[in-house]
Length: 200
Image 1 (spheres, rainbow, N blue to C red):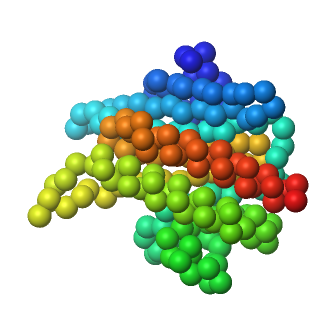
Image 2 (cartoon, rainbow, N blue to C red; image 1 turned 60 degrees about the vertical axis):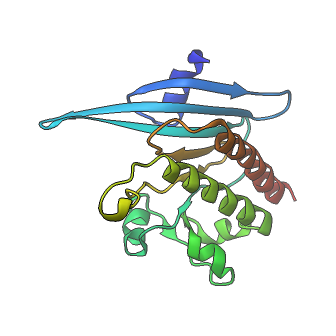
Image 3 (cartoon, rainbow, N blue to C red; image 1 turned 30 degrees about the horizontal axis):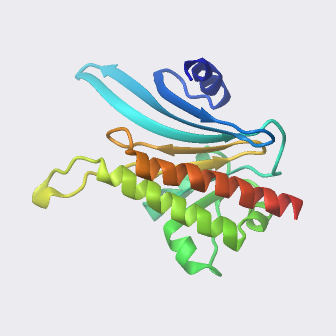
């Protein structure tokens, strides 16, 4: 659906680059589910570098949650405070759920409100979705260096807003159908789990 490219670019502040292909699914009384690739090219003194981002969005016409946070697969713990300060947020420490806290980073400006939404259902979906996203991203990364080690990958992240969810990955190639289908399902599951907290 090429007609969605510019609205998506504006809504999520995606900047330049080509948005293609764009897939959309919407049923009556349901949010719109969108998946698309963004291809970026950066030019510099040493040449140009191409980058691919795969994004999955859930778009609603009404406010569903009173919440704003970002969640990502946990990478370098030393950089978490820097990442949080960029958005004026803080990383939530969740010692009562150590397995989740070890593998997932949650950044929020209103920690208490964010904790209310981190129900068991929400944590399960987030952990599963980010694991799927990580596996799919790393499967597409080039091997290099001693022993053919995987090149470092950018951590997948999901941004939760009052109306919309946006998952961002940076794979080397477009994702195969199977992991993308799992991510689409998990995004809808996350939307439902978050909505149930707000209306429970």
